[in-house]
Length: 291
Image 1 (cartoon, rainbow, N blue to C red):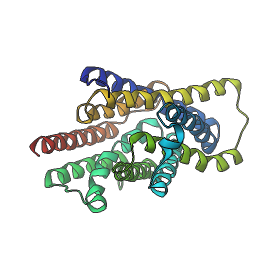
Image 2 (cartoon, rainbow, N blue to C red):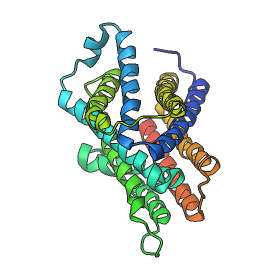
Image 3 (tube, rainbow, N blue to C red):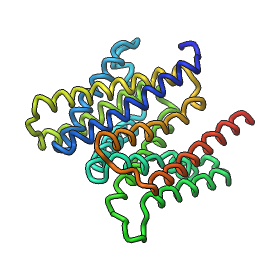
Image 4 (tube, rainbow, N blue to C red):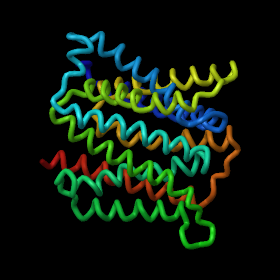
């Protein structure tokens, strides 16, 4: 166990969010040129290699790391995350980076809303208030009923719901399995799930785009490594609020690189979502201290 150092943990977390935003930008570029299944498949091949490389360095190797009594649950988690990434990358190409990330930022609130009925966790009235405020932010971004609503805006919302279920399954699995075991099955199950379809839609890529594909794989592995380092050096409650920087960095890339427009309703909707999310994190930290 590494020595706790909150400042270092924060630095790793900020770096991870920046890298993940870069990964989203590269995914958006490649998915506009090539089939989404192929792009995500190659990304997952590298992710699986990365997970197996880490597992091989742990005592007992891959066999010990992969050992679990929840194999069906772990495989389901991996497949669900791979499917969610397909949906989100498709949203990047159809709706744009800025609005997709803004809607997706609601997933922590969806997790809280579903944790009561699915995990039987207590969700108090203040958390429900935060959830309602967050969804007002989502509606502000989507603008249904005002003549400008596009059904495409539901795609990142579907992605957020899928990721929320993935997060809840991960929380459930963590009661019996170590984090590295979950990481291993997430990568391997996702790669196996994507490979048949990804190979079917295989397209020849230019040399320049292979460079971008390499960058996509490297940013994915590096981002996960930075995230692991962050959680090893600081308490989750101290660095979790920084996850919203992902939306900030991704929005900058969307505006600067892809010439997307940050509309006022998206900006204010994002502010409501972030405020509600931060309030939920603060309430969780307060209740943890009280208990």
